[in-house]
Length: 338
Image (cartoon, rainbow, N blue to C red; front, top):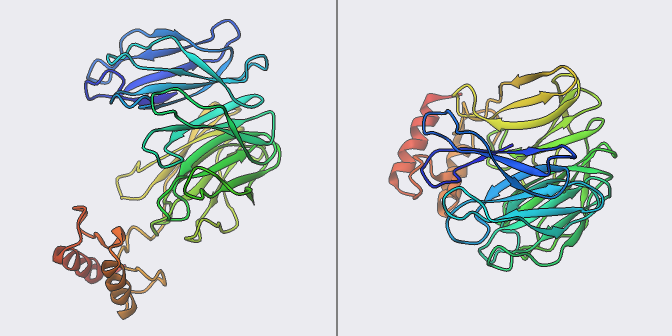
C-alpha cells in the first residue's frame, strides 16, 4: 500500500496492490476528507502486482503511480498517469529485471524529473528507469545488488545532495548501499550484514545526527537490523531489535511525539505489528553537535563552523534561514542541557 493525495483535494488517499493471479490491478480509495474512504476503483496493471509507489512522474503537478509486476512472463513496472482528478490512464509497462518486487521514486540523475528504482527479487540486481521528462521512461539500466533484493529505498546517504540507493537482499543476509556519483550512475554496491531473509529497508535519521540510517526487517530471524550511518554513507555494524515472527515490512515515523523517528514492523507469522519506540538521546540533546555526550565549548565551535558554512544543521529555529535567531535557539538548547 502507498499513501498520497491523488485527487488534489489536500487529503491523503490510498492505493493497494491486489496480488492475486486473477486480479492484475490496483485499488484506489479516495479519502472523503474525514479519514473514511470511498469504495475502491480498480485500474489494470501487469500480472501479480507486488509494490506501488506514488509521485508526480509527468511533471503536471499531480501524483501518478508506479507498480511492479512480478509474473516471470512480464517482469515489468506499470506506470499509470493521473488524469488530474484521481482517475488514471491505462498502464504503460516497462521492462525491469527478473521478478520485480519493490519500486521507489526519486530524481536520480538530477534533471528535475522523477525516475524509478526497482528491486529484482529473482536476480542480484536492481533496475533504474530514467524519466524522459514526460512520464515515459528509457530502457532499464542494471545496477548490482546482493542475492534476491526484495526492497529498495532512496535517500541521500553520504550528504552530497543527490539520492543514493539501499537494497534489502533476502537471500544473502545483507543490505546493498550504492552511492550516487551525482549523475544517476552508481559504483559497485557495498554490502553490510543484516539478519536472515531481509525483506524491507527504510531510511531515516534514527540517531539524530543529521544523516540517514537504515532499518531492515529480517523475515527469518524475526527481528530488525538498525545500521547507523557514519556520516559519509558508510555504516556501522548492525544492531538487532526483536520484532515478531516473519518480520516482513518496516515503516518509520514519530509515533510518540518526542521528535525522533520510531519503527513499526509487520510480522507475517504472528499476524501482528511490533512498535519500537526510539530511545536515542540525540534529539533530547540537540546542542551536542560534536556527539561526545557532553555540552562543552567544542559544541559552540561546532555550531559556529556549521553556521559559517551555511549548513542547514545550524538552522536551530527551523525557519529555513541562518540568522541571529539560530544563535539564540542554540543557546537555549545548550542551557537546557542533556
